[in-house]
Image (tube, rainbow, N blue to C red):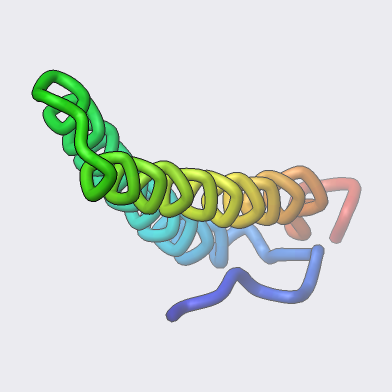
Length: 96
């Protein structure tokens, strides 16, 4: 997995590379949220029919998977936000 640069200072010509990396990571998070949506749909489908202990167990497993996926996504998106917030661009007139 490509990670964001660890440095906080970028040259202006490095910005497009950072933008591509961030977009790639955000797209991965969007895909992760699609998986959460699919799990939620499974829960909805299971809950619309007659309940059995097996179905309740499956619903619980899907709900736990949703919680873990959302927790992980929130952490990764937070890291993206922190990185972007801490970036400063070197190459502006007062930085040269």
